Image (cartoon, rainbow, N blue to C red; front, side, top):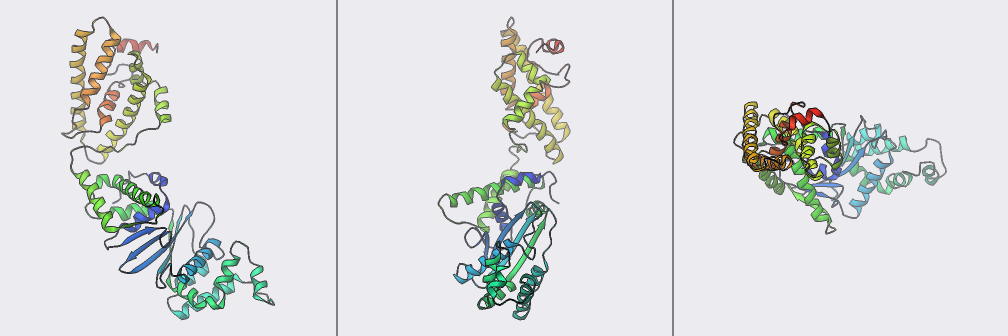
Amino acid sequence: MANKTLVPDKLHGYLLQVIHMLYELISVDDRVVSIEKLDDVAVEIDGKVIAEQLKSVTSANNPVANRAAVFWKTLYNWCTYIEDASLPSDAILRFVVVSNSTITPGSIQKTFMDAHSDDEAQKALTYAKKIILPTSKQESNVNIYATLPESYRDYIKYLFDDTKSQIVCNIIKSIEIEIHNDTYNEDLLRRFTNQPGLPSEYVDLLLTDMLGWVTQKVLSFTKENMPAYISSEDYRKALTLQIRACNTNAVLRAISSPPSHIEQSGEVERLDAYIRQLKLIEVDDSIIFDAASDFLRAKIDKIEWAQRGLINEQSFDDYYDALYRIWVNQKHLMGLQYRTDPISFGTAVYFKCRDDSGHLKLQGIETPPFFGSGTLQLMANNPADAPKIGWHPQYIKLLKEDNI
């Protein structure tokens, strides 16, 4: 089952070509997938080629409607590619539509998809001419085409030319139309999840990891002004390395992403107890912003690890207890050194606790660098009127006075 924690919005930062390249790399056969080599995306398997044109739809436009200019332009492009030998004549031609709403193929597109023989392709082409071209008698084909919209007039004129009939019919026989009606991200996640050996608790993270890997591979080619291509063998090797990293259990993996500066600012401006505590000991703003970031990430990851079954609740309790003991010890030690200087006392306690928290394991596993600090912030924030731990020797009294 696909991990429901995946937020589809996470994929929106990637180019559709890159996402679909990964989509095609997820396969049990040996293949090479390319971008801008033979087409938008192309798949080569055992000498066979699947050329794919990708169309993203975010409006009411339907790229597979009878009179969709983008559809006729695609057929025109395929014709020219085959004529100049950029594409083999027996290539499978796939028109992939990723839409945020429900669209359906027009009647012409349906007849093209159902045509598998020469006779069926010719009938489909004749039907297309009947639908697209004017029904009134004209003195010449020029006048007939002149009545068509400029957006697809030249493509139709080229494709409906009798001298192109054979190549157009071959394209009709080869064409496939694949439509993802507001389900593309879910389709990708489902396809990715069905691969064997994936740890279910990290499926969504592995997906974004592999998208990042594909992106970097593509960039390495485009920097050299070359078409990008990746083999399924290289993809599987990279995925295996990522799976091994997840399965080592040496370090708990961060689920959260670093918050933006705007998010940190908003958190600081809330003046929750843990922020006010840091202001009581007069630390720099940069330290406060770091604490806000650690707090936000630790709060997210604590929930995510529990939901994924990586950490049980008792282990969190043990972790809090260990941090509390660290705080108690440091408070006593620093109290001996800074008896008459509460600001220096609080600063020393805070930084020593933060440093020690980085070495503390959760359920016997190392945590990301921010988690120990973030958990200290959680403890210094709850309960709001009298947090369990604090930095200034009189933190509870000062927080209640609320003079920050």
